[in-house]
Length: 382
Image 1 (cartoon, rainbow, N blue to C red):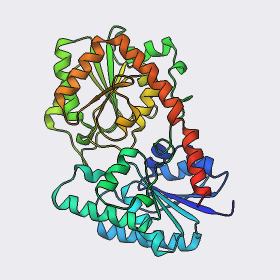
Image 2 (image 1 turned 90 degrees about the vertical axis):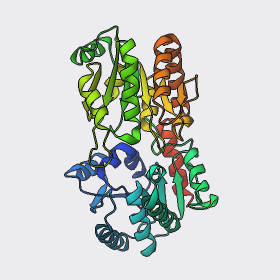
Image 3 (image 1 turned 60 degrees about the horizontal axis):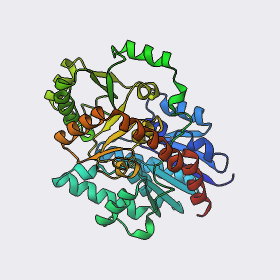
């Protein structure tokens, strides 16, 4: 218990989304401290729920050189005072600032988990800048943990670092999934009927669901166009959109927003704290993202016995086996999304079988305790 570990994310919502339960588990073996931006009372609330110390350091998700230098200095002072055995960062900005400050302050073990590469969709000067920043992060780190095997390949192809520095923990994923929590048996028929009624979904409707940020990078423009066309021929279908817009970072096309607002068979709920009930009333996940690390949503849907339509990108194509757990389609392909929806809709019995196979797959490979144990072993071996 004498050894200290400091875990860092850019914003506190990432702690809850990426690391729920994990910090509390690790605190039985190490003295844990969490650093993130304040985010109102969110960071403090997370510390209370996990039973660990928290230290606020303001960090931004955008390119803000002056603010970033201030954050590096604050982190440097924290590391000099706390003298951690390990600094372990998550999310791009926290990774760069945290690894740089950790190296400057002499932290012996500097670990960074990669859960996605925003630079994959960037171009021009922005791409050059992001590539350079990524290389700085990796050079300051002593170990890099891509949370999928596909990400590991991308990192090596871009020559960001060498193979020796890379390791995928367990079978992938930053935190695994609690398959007893994400389980359809927790939801009664009465609950399902009531939730459907509240959303004007009838018992005969076939429900496709998307969970995540409603942004261009998640393939929402293509998804909405595809569903809108498919829905013209199949009126007893619904599309549930569970998640917030991020118009300041990655806005949707105006045409997409218009369709969402006018098609009565598209239901947008905004951010939802507990998505399980929405999975319980749905028949199939559609997740046509452009880029991912290791998407929690696809694991969650699989654990809830849903088949998934996913884009052929790392993470997604590691969780889903085509025609066994769902369908894998090309990226940015509106027509492919529509065809996959038609196939699942017309072959509902096969879809249910895929869903049952999905849960078996998630339980056997991605149960969160397996991921936690593998990461603990990694810490112990340092």
